[in-house]
Image (cartoon, rainbow, N blue to C red; front, side, top):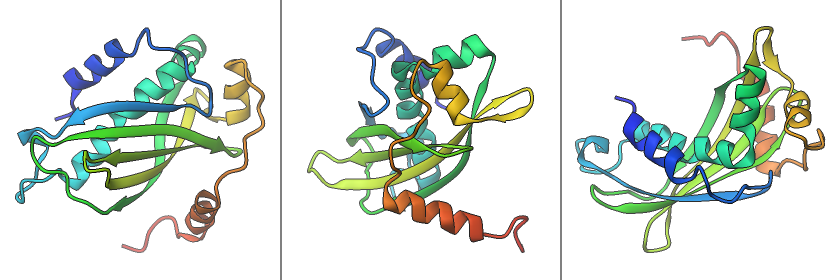
Length: 177
């Protein structure tokens, strides 16, 4: 089940937090609960993706994106993700989550998130591409940034994000299986 109560807590907790610039990093802390684990008593890989929502939505709130979406009647969707898992997160372990927007292109916003254990080890890292949607489909990021009161020009995307975009462009759609 989606962690609605945890999301409400995060939104409430950060509703009066200092605004973040487009290059700001939202830092939050989360506990791996028994309902987040798999058979090996560690954070389930699918649940990891769900928990990343607990960082992305407050990031969007603090950056002013949620207010713009509400004002314009737009929505927000995930259009792709690339995840690297490197260290286990065990039940009852608390992690620090870091979330930031790295830039945008003609269609998507690109976000980076990571979970860090108390021992200083990065447990996992995700890169997302997100689309703002309206009645006519995807709203160009330049239009979104202008509506937010920012310049529509993206900072240069990191090389690893550019390579991921290239790889996604080569990937067949619909898939073969």
